[in-house]
Length: 593
Ligand code: PEP
Ligand code: MG
Image (tube, rainbow, N blue to C red; front, side, top):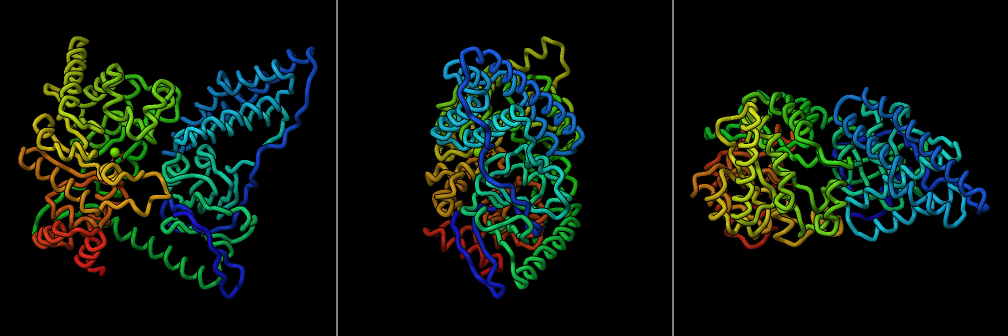
């Protein structure tokens, strides 16, 4: 939740600010404050004769900026891991924006129409694009405004030949403080030197937040008033768990947080030792714990987590941060990295789930109004509107399936006919590949559905007849059941997966899978919270999928749990009408009350 408050301690200087904790952990460092504000560029009118030379100057500046991006691309190739990959995508998008985009074309037009210098034209065009995007009230497009500004400012710097302070070479133990940290900048931060990020702008779903999580860098975004409370050189602390920023922390605060930080490290080291141990309850029931991942690059997190497979591969991340859609070969190669790394362990590949806050620039151009809405052309609906894309994705999945144990999962399904239509496309892709003489699995891989819409949960018995397995998505299920946007911090306190309505839908879905004899797992964020493990296992789930760092904690909880007792507690909980009471009953069972 957003808010702002100051609390004075003995030193009378300590200031506590609150924002959104978007990447967990505690970071303590020396503030490097990157001042806010656009680049101060000269603006003036030009004569009619100067128009052509000015347009040429704009083109040359764009070429110079592209060259700069190319140099950054070369550097990015040397960065390992998710950071390198994310940065590569972004720089690619920036490169194309500098080549032929509304920003460059619009600036050219402004020079010709209004007879203004190139800097003024770029600045005005940038403002106009930002105004239009901001009016669209869409988290993804709001994040794109930052990209337009980044490229526009780069262009203006190139015109004025002014450099910008890079965040890449900051000294050790720095904590970055800014009005906004762009995703490209976040990807440049060296996690071994930089202690964290605090920024006034940004939400939990933006790419900066994703990058911070990928880098394991504590981050608090959306902090009102941040820049008026902190100066470069101040000691600063970000608490990504609680969404707190403490400027000039007093001795006692520092000691408290330092203790917590060490405890976290100790606990993480202890939990890693669990990786070889089974997730077996005290009364001898073994639970499968799998990982949710977005990019093949995240595979490096898996060995320490002890994941028994990939329960959810969110394929849409391959479609983000680029202006085109990946082709069959590219998708196949990316999938193969995951499938090969997992050996015979299962890999559940979810088909494209763009729409809402996750989107692809290429598809947004085509379906922006509908795909941008949480109730629009999302997930399977978009895939069935563009069966060419779905077929391409299925071909890539089928080719990868030869090498491992692959399952296919459809997002946002609400009707049986969607499953049937998707299965037809899957068969078509299989037949097409067979005609091409491609090496293929004999049987089609299991085709399952996400249960993440209330209507799907209520129709679970019918869907179970058409689907080979269920994966319950508690994130969207909670959002749609309670009509609360999961990405809106203003209603975050109302978002509650323990609401009896949500729990009944989850229980009904698991029971429907049981009646139909098909496997069921749960892969929403609930599955990764150890507090909920007893309830989910008590409701009958035996397969949980979560972000890799959560696996050891959930495993630890399962190993100390008696499943028969958990089932009794789940029974008691399902008779309740109030989520507060449910939380208390759970805490009590977990020994936390
Ligand atoms: C969910 O909705 O619970 C889910 C797992 O899918 P995503 O978070 O990708 O929407
Ligand atoms: Mg979902």
